[in-house]
Amino acid sequence: MTNEELTLNIEKALDEIRPFLNSDGGDISLVSIEDEKHVKVRLQGACTSCSLSISTMKAGVETTIKKYAPQIETVENIA
Image (cartoon, rainbow, N blue to C red; front, side, top):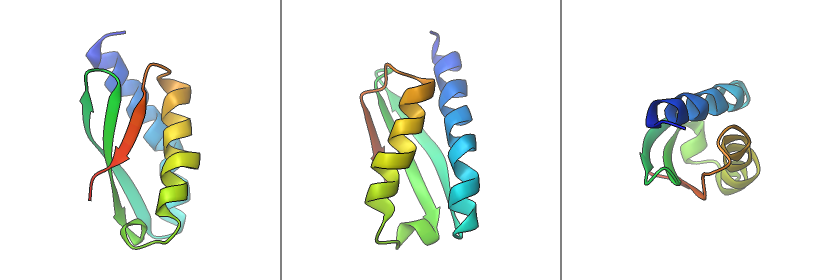
């Protein structure tokens, strides 16, 4: 998979997650992909102060990204 394909797959994953975050006043954006294994994202809006953001990252964001790009090992929120 090329870097471009990887980026597109991760953006597809974020597009799948985004409506759920938007419904609670939040959003998410891709910050970077490092070594084709580590993804950094930024939670925005209401998600930045939500007490459930850690659960959202693990259960929602990381799981969905790995569905689209199985080679990803970690997903990290950058404040």
